[in-house]
Image (cartoon, each protein chain N blue to C red):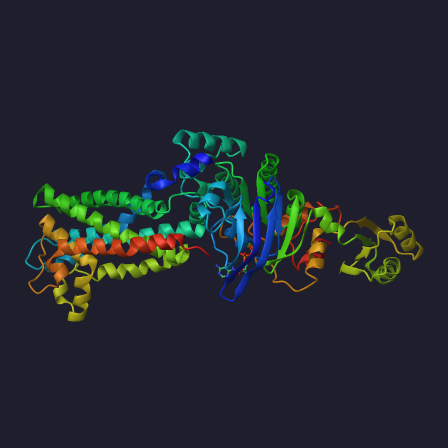
Length: 276
Length: 363
Ligand SMILES: Nc1ncnc2c1ncn2[C@@H]1O[C@H](COP(=O)(O)OP(=O)(O)O)[C@@H](O)[C@H]1O
Ligand SMILES: [Mg+2]
């Protein structure tokens, strides 16, 4: 016991604990994946259906601005949408831990204060990366491909990972506030229209101006536009597009940093709020 | 180190309008098992959460091994184990993985966490199921896993919040054995329960709480001694109960209470002898199936302490945590223990206003 308390004193010891505890929680995620690899796939059933629905059924009726193949236009949108879905995945995971008492067990242990939120978001980054790989394979199968070289393609994936990390902090916070599996589960469908209200499936040019305004400022739109730009896929924004869509890479980075700046401190505080 | 290892002084906690704790005092000596006994909503969980650093009191102070639970929460956390009202394990991991994870989070080395997990799995009879995902465990297995997770670093003080609520009798017995063994090893245990028999069997000291404050405390024997003896009569013919009641009233000086038709119970003066009761009833031509002179049950002590004030009816047990017995967990206990027979240890049933109904169902 003396040993455990000693190691945590001093900033060096605390940092070591944070990293170790965080790594343990990431390892937890790996074990979960090993037991239920289906969950990774399940998270992608929806985008797969979207590929079929939009790519093959409705795609023929949608005209890509500037011309080009609709499925090539669609894939960046789906990448962004799957990235956005990490909010829901995180909310659900954190709320489940909170309502099942696992979070309380963490809190009652001499763990590093930062480790739980950092570990949980770190674990999500891992599953996010795996999701992207599977999605990319799926895209290649339906005829999508990056056209501007591997470096720019990697940059696009890095950008998606960054945004996902920011979004997972938002999800972490939501889960900590909601603390209830069922409520979290009921909230999830609400997030779907948010990702639809973007340029992921259709160009925003045709929307009423107020709706277009919202859609253009949606982080999903910035990420979609950034991917189209970096992958060299069709659908370049029109000249009168709002700033985030006109400068999508910068906007996506801004969105990610903003999410982290807001939700990191909020999550860490919420994790330590006592008194339920 | 004369100070008790767990001390709470005047704890208050409010949730909006609900005054969950109203000046709770508590002192537990090292190495003892303290039973915190009270009905649903009495404030047991709130008290445990404060002592385990999960909640801060609105007023009052608490120390564990000399460390303030608010200001020195980290120190306290290094010394305690907590098994909450619900099994707090990751249902998507195996039992072994759960224990290794929590061991690592307790900052045991990888090898030590591994060894400790194996030891505990062996000791608590979960070795066979160790590599199955915890989601497939029965309620009792999950509780045991939860208990094991709180024992990874041999805590100085172990908090157990209703460890057997909702379990079948066999699983209860297993948890009881485990707690008794820990107590024998010298671990201080604070155990909350709504079951009188549980407190009676496991606790060295019982603290009875209701509405957020202590309403009685002592060893099980001391608590029972406060009430004197009881005499129970089971009549062959329920029709003769009026006559029998008169006989008993004359002998004990109190009108007996009839928990169910054909059954009479009454406080008994220390001078009352069983043979006299039998003789007097016989003289009045009352045929009896059973006459018992016994010490009061904790249930009766509890009713006495609360002075018969009305209580919230015990809520239906929460079944969200995967329990073995979705119905009233008391039912199983009632079957296992004939009511009114045993002295002390045999009193099944939950504290609170349901004692009479319980007996009625048994008869
Ligand atoms: N988070 C909370 N919000 C509101 N009321 C609460 C909360 N936690 C406990 N209570 C209330 O405080 C009282 C004591 O609860 P609790 O400590 O859980 O009792 P017990 O564990 O003895 O059943 C109850 O009336 C309960 O409804
Ligand atoms: Mg409780």
